[in-house]
Image 1: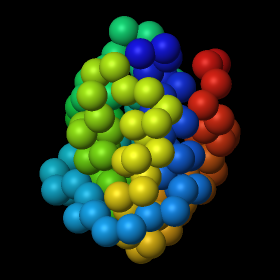
Image 2: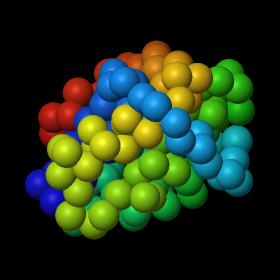
Image 3: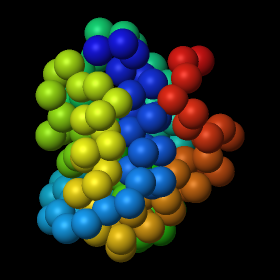
Length: 131
């Protein structure tokens, strides 16, 4: 995989932007709900080039989200983590597109809400590029 950090960001953008159909919707909600904002943001920015989508999902799931996140944004985080976990280790852009097409419109809206929350809390919008 080219850049897993970019994959996480691009995956989030693809999930938010692409059309969707069916799909089950998301994660189990077992990740923490009391992460510090600093650790939440740092988890996204510290994903390195050797991280698979599953490893990225595991790291995000481990840190969770801050307690002040709205329920829709929290669900969007869970959807993103769940869908990243399903990607193959050597995921390509086409895999992200296929993953996004499996989303229900309500899940897509929640992922968009999560992206807005992330941008507000972390001071940046994921772009798919490396930082």
